[in-house]
Length: 235
Image 1: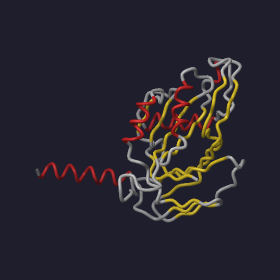
Image 2 (image 1 turned 90 degrees about the vertical axis):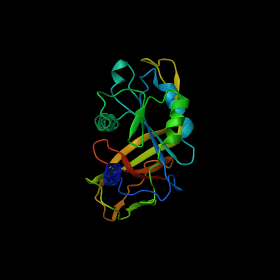
Image 3 (image 1 turned 90 degrees about the horizontal axis):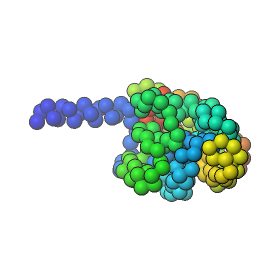
Image 4 (image 1 turned 120 degrees about the vertical axis):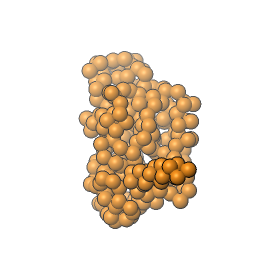
């Protein structure tokens, strides 16, 4: 019994080292399931995952983000929303999750697990069982972000600003694997900016104005190199 108690205590300390701030209840008001889809207009397997993640996007307690990656552009269609920094984020996740490579479609949930997102039921189950990411650490306004002081993470965390288009955008595709199709995009990410780092102290950041009024704003505080998301909020 003593050994079991010691093991349990060690696990609690290990979790606390990675997750410096937790909600007072499993899923408190404002907490989020962060669903990140990595996809491409040049990927014939991606439309079902796009639809499944898009269906989650208006649900309370979910932050659904769609990142367009660049490496399928070679198939004859250049993705209209893809950026190298989005591809780099997916490669970071491949390292953080211990994967041999990247693939599409890929859904990363809270920075902690991945699945294809093609099976709506499997995606729904993963979101439902996930422990949502706490939001109380963060205070977001139109022009700034404040982060409360809390127990410091094991290593300084990255603070990410994400701007995404909340509309459903219909994009006609005229080449590549999806030639002739019109693909809907919801919550497509348009900007990904690292604001700085957080080491447990109270911090504040100025936010640049959004390029378009339709863009939503999300903040992720995340362990570096594709690690777990420690806190998140959106407007």
